[in-house]
Length: 159
Image (cartoon, rainbow, N blue to C red; front, side, top):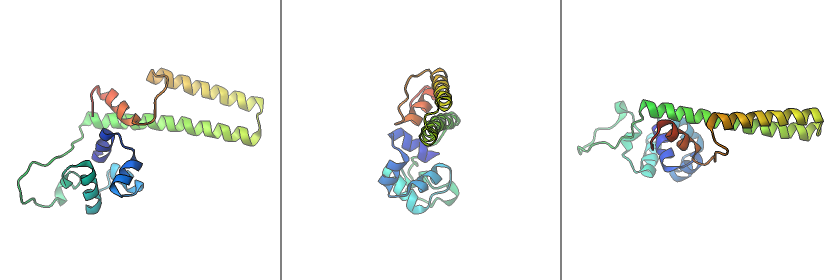
């Protein structure tokens, strides 16, 4: 979760972070889901985010420091964790809508423009669009930095 918070603060996608660190997107996803990063991954992340490597290494495996310096830790509070979870759920909602639209296009292309099929998908599109407008009180939500903006709105402050 710390990696996700730092990534969202900078407005980066998982693809961009993977490119900057030289890690795979799958590795970034695993680390964001809570899997412990390797030493090499921790070094790459610490370098990109300009924080101490101990930020990504759990307390029980962190090496002793020879110089006493306060660690630069990015702690995630409970309200931030809840806001990030909420933001992820909203993003998943939009991805679901996208999948339904793509399936509608495929069915129409495969079965032809039958009036009942077109009417069904037209009504479904209208219902989903109205649901999104009423739920989020927005007309259009850009997908770039969406998770960060939703989390900030939920928290009422910047991450």
